[in-house]
Image (cartoon, rainbow over all chains, first blue to last red; front, side):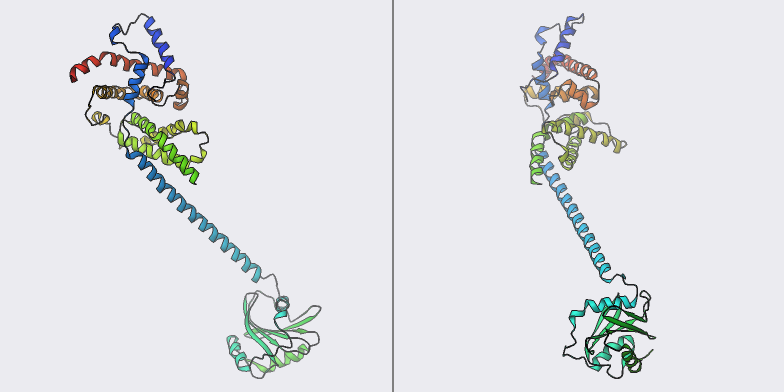
Length: 235
Length: 171
């Protein structure tokens, strides 16, 4: 830097020459006159005030902290993003899974039966006892006095987001499914429903709706009578 | 990220001295100059990706520093105190003739009006042309040339008159 000629200096030189050609003679003592380069050197030397040795370290230190903060902020943002995505994803799944895309009890019951069709077979040999069924029925304030048939499975399940009990009985040719569903507003009650293979009936009781679904070989009215006479509801 | 780190380190290493000196001549205060340089490099770090041309780094940093300095006045307009003349100089006693002259010349530079000293510092320390300086300071090139000329003349005049006295004083 010291020996570098400084751009712009030449212009100044011209100016100085112009000046000295003019009438005002600033430097009439030639011994005391200094050349432009000498002057520049002196200026540069004077302007080069000492820089504290620490400054470089301080700058690096500040930067380290700053970038650390930045990273932390970034990872926080990433975490927040991940969390939001997870929440949205789970909401979507939940919505799709339990959405009320079915508007009636019947539609939903049919869909539910088809969904779990493969889980039960009419030839299943395990049976659920009346006692354990009644334990579960207690949730709905109901009691089954006499077995309605051979009970293959009895489990709580979600019925369009409504708490329900899913009973699978052995039928003549295929399972007979009985749902005990808490009374809720958001699925419309449908007394009779059917499609090509299945038929169903809903019975409204004080505490719950009972939905019976079976294939077309089954007599639903028989099942209905059975349920009416064997299930008692306490308040 | 690692690449950015390396660029930053190189930038600090190469330019922190000049930047500090520039800050010093702008503020006449070592501490304030250091603070300015720190602020400047911190901002530079955050905006490092926007610096495409390494050659422009110095003027980029100087621009940031000038802005920081202006901000300092906005922020602390009422806290600012007049700088102490004694504060301007290094406290260490001059050890040889060269130091004495530097010392003396620094005093003279510091006493220049800032509109004169700033272009001069940019010219001498930064090695910028009159046109560059005009761009950096948002001034007309002719204005810059005039100020440079006057600043240099004032200092030269002083230098040509004073050294005899100085030598006499210190010998």
